[in-house]
Length: 305
Image 1 (cartoon, rainbow, N blue to C red):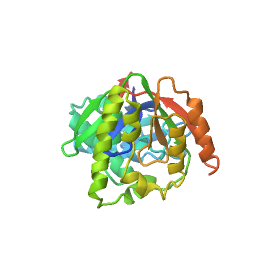
Image 2: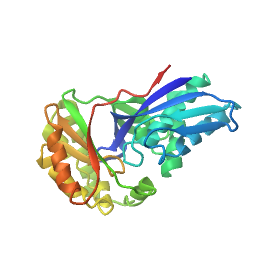
Image 3: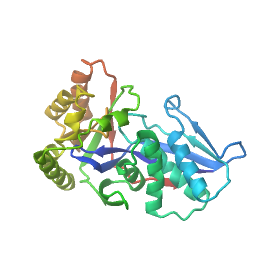
């Protein structure tokens, strides 16, 4: 048996829709894989508190695709023991898909290129969200801060952030059916030139601010003129929550992926208590349960034995 550990991730970071993501060590997918004598080519078991909510769909889709493409008749048993909250905007399907690819690559001794691994993992994303977006997949696979240059072929750049920065995830608990599909559906297909210029400027400032520890650049850079405004109808509490978090010392705030969770960038000495207070002031009024979790930047998925 082998075990693969992959990390959660936060996509978009404000202005970087489908083009920026950062790997988070706050949550992990832990996937055990072994050969099986059971009927059926793939058997999925999900353990832990997410077991009642997380189906085997992304793992099964990825595993079936790999077995088919390589003509394997092996029976595979996959057991998920991860703690990534499902449907919260922290890349659960991407992490599950990445873990499955690495598990089968190792178990079947496959010579998969990085591009092939990413493409197989994107099958899991497509199965869950209806779109084979790569931001969460690549961040979970390689770790760090990832900027996507091209989808086909997948080209990306892995960056580091300043070591004195830390992250916090406000993990917000809202049950929403097909949340990612709904959140992507409200993204406008046509945008104003001024909005495009604003987001390009902000993403450039954000990357530089994260590299150099510039609070003002991070604060300005995490503003989004396109996607977050379109999603405010889905998350009406978010604008006031962001305002309150910034007032309580967060350097930058953005919806994490498709939400509802929120990513905060903090200084090394910034206490989480102020972030919790700010979150309570807004989310308690809306009777929305949440938790605040500190996170570092994850280094990427690993295979353990």
